Amino acid sequence: MQMKKRVFGRIEAAFDILYLLSAFIIGIYLLYTGDLPVRILAGSMAFLLVFGDAFHLLPRIGVIITGKEERFTKALGIGKLITSITMTIFYLFLLQIGLMLFQPDASFLLSLPVYILALLRILLCLLPQNRWTDRYPPVRFGIYRNVPFFLQGLVVALLFAMHMGTVSAVSGMWIAIALSFGFYLPVVLWANENPKLGMLMLPKTCCYLWILVMCLNL
Image 1 (cartoon, one colour):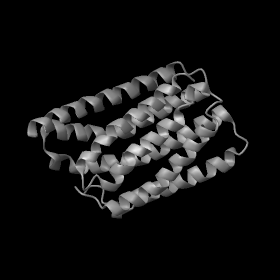
Image 2 (cartoon, rainbow, N blue to C red; image 1 turned 90 degrees about the vertical axis):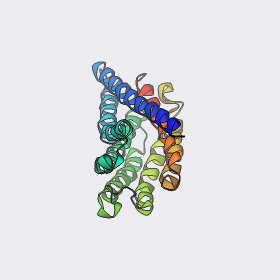
Image 3 (tube, rainbow, N blue to C red; image 1 turned 180 degrees about the vertical axis):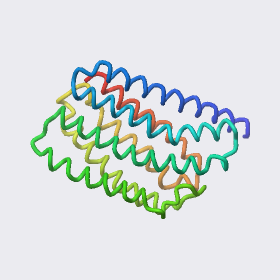
């Protein structure tokens, strides 16, 4: 069992490094070939993703390499806070990409609730009751802060779903968003009781890479 745990840990560390490098390279390519505003925005979104996730994943890799979780508990907690905020902003970028591509008539009505939900999510993330640096933060506040995040993602997914035939390059965007939240939900609800559910973060991460890859074709 211990051997299997070490092997999976190494696979997870390699996956995290590959993910960060892949997202970074995609961001560079999008900005380098950014002759269109939407590609520049997508490249900036990729860099935001790498920046935010690195704060969480690098300490996680440190835990895997050293096996000393207590040494990285505070860094992991702060990293999760930063990642929670940058992921919220990530969906604002994705919303703007959708609005630039589809130019819906009701763009203001779509944007307003997403920005309000983003603000609410960030405020909830900043509350001290989250106890980010605890080894086992309270599940209740994890649910509270993720409710507006899920609603934010739902609105953005609906935007892409309603216009999935308009721009073929992003026709699968709403599926990637829905899957990412589908993988994330069990982690939020039950990972404290069953840590193995944390493995669902790997396919969730693949969904974000899929989102970036779709942006390459814009």
